Length: 445
Image 1 (cartoon, rainbow, N blue to C red):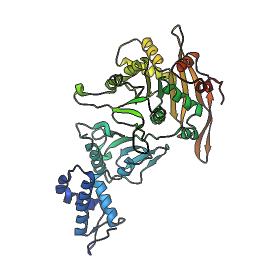
Image 2: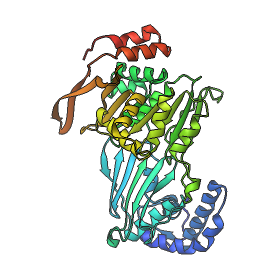
Image 3: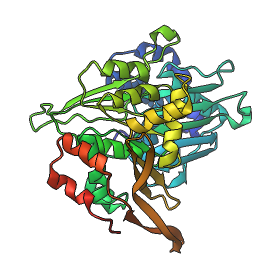
Image 4: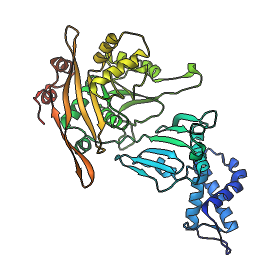
């Protein structure tokens, strides 16, 4: 550890040292533009190190190396937010104002940070630095910014005059850390039963399109990631995501050879609309890439029409959307499709129910547990009429406070077996009869 200080120690508070060092290195920092980030980091740290030693600067509560790291983080990184941005167990960072920051963890806990910004201006400086890395500018002419900091970090920023100047800034940073849970872990955490998971996996594997629906943070992406991971390696999977990439489905063997068949794509937006590459365009192009399974990360708009068209042409399509129930999912899809074409509601509803016969509704409950609350099948009869039948559901029996914490008590139920038409379709698509039999048994809790 480097503890070399001048004999005349000059102790100051951290904010004063930060300001002094920033002023000193500002004329040299522009020379640190490099294609090698590690080299750039070392250069800046050497400037900080030398200035502290030359001026005998110290700060109570920090040894020399800690002070250098803290100054570097403030000047080149993102202050105390850095550790949360790159943590594997953080789901969201919410800055309500400069001195009120809450962290949402993957286990559902929401905890205030011990650290706060030094001032409203300090908060503004750090967030502007974050935005600058992605080419976004926050100022009075653009006080609201929505974008992506990286493939896995989404950000929404509100600055003055939308936010009072004395509050500094309001920020929501969503860190996409889809947990790669196994089937055993889903069962252990009571997210679903083994039979429910096997059913969803079997349907996708054998060409039945499905939609995972629910609110934000309900576990849709985590479940869809696992379902995609169950696709055999010889099947070609084409993923389409909006703005940032959440999935990493590539599998390698012990010799680092890729063993599965995956294409990951992401949208690209431009101020020039003719240069936009949105989900709808990627869907159209995906159909020419010989996919066995197409994943549309999330349906929000007109891409819903292209997704249902792809599903109705025989491709297996899996997607997510925001809805409050399985039944409401079809209404949501219909509304999204109308953004593309002014077709009557009944026609569009018939299209989406044909395209996505299986819907799974996920929910994050009040005790922070995540459940697949319901799985439905939409059965279409020869006369064209439709019936949405519940196959599985989670029933809440009671809510209890145990050791001061809410515990939701319930159980999964198998309500109906799959329809004869779905049985026939699965058999035609190659499902072995012994794999199908357990889904034809009457329900047990």
